[in-house]
Length: 200
Image 1: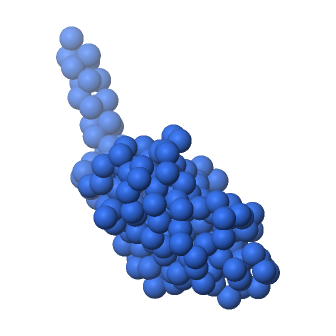
Image 2: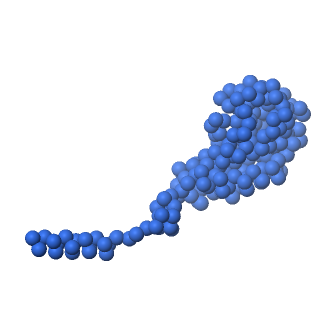
Image 3: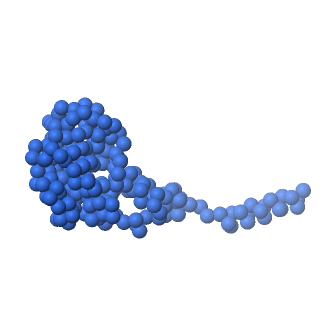
């Protein structure tokens, strides 16, 4: 009986010596170390929003230059990216009929052969905002999943800050002022991810 109690005491002592107490929120807390896309997005979006607003070019100025020479316009106004430069634009247009939260916009001064659309959610797709400043690199993250998740976190932060206060389900026929970014792949097809939206 005494031997059994002694063995338990020794075992408990050994476990205690081999146990590290990790205070919640400390650097050793695994939850703190894990990448949080939403925290990252909330941290980065204000800077990205300011960057896009500062760089944004009026659509009526940008459109003819993009049509005339896509590469020259990208070099002059955009941020280089491996899958098409990120361009920055500001415009006021009338919203057409939405499809899956994407509104076509009729914009004065923009040629009819350019399709201008803005995405309003519920899902915000793409990595245009992540890639906009040109300084968020794959090498900053543990793997491709984190890099992709960073883009999603920024998009969610934008949605919360910019779109959640707007009735995005009923913009058809309304005049909408948008500042945002789009990836220049086809000069005649602009899919804008907004950083600022005002509905008149």
